Length: 289
Image (cartoon, rainbow, N blue to C red; front, side, top):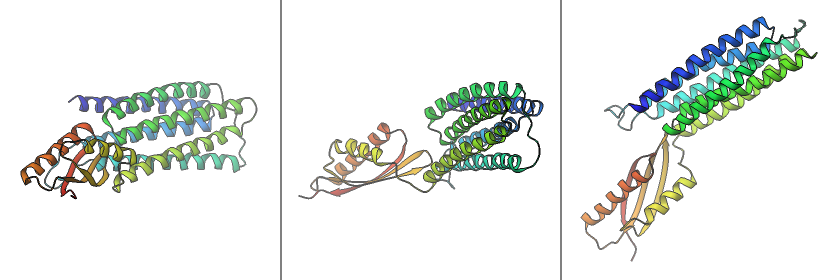
């Protein structure tokens, strides 16, 4: 219940905050004659949809196992993260295209007013606060989709910094810097989109849990009662959870019941020690004499 409450609260903060910011920045961009601020408003508008996708992905991934999905639904969160990455990439390319079009067109570039500068400052402060708020709870729940959403907020804050610099330079006599700021925003967004998409794909294709995690598991298992040796250890990601395939060696002279008890102990202790581990499959080998 507490987790469901946190997910709802994060979603409300993300959606309502971005709707307000997008409307404010769009108003400031149009009234203040700033293409960079309009691009920034479009970025904030994409965040509304991104937060909704993250919310949907996290809720669906938390569903319990069923007959059709005996291993659970965790990978739906990876799908949500991948969609977020694609949304970001599309937003970045759109903003980049607008900036290039303004630079190469023969239209006279307008000098922005002070209003877009104010909007940029409000955006930087608000989006950075939303980044820290979302990332705090995303780490607490170990949610890749909400981590992606947090970086979406951070990319918006960075794009607002670029917009602020571009608008400020345009205002003091360099109007071409306003569309240049849109291009800088585009590059930042594409970089974040690439990182989010890459991480989502890594979690979808059964990547290992990493050398550090595997070494920690080895060290922990090796000190458990009855474990003579670790013959094999494989880990694989399943969304934000980890599956382990483990082969341990035990004394070849003990009974089947004793070997079973050693395996059961290792199984339960590993799942207690490493909360991200969803299941451990253990095979017991007879130790060499």
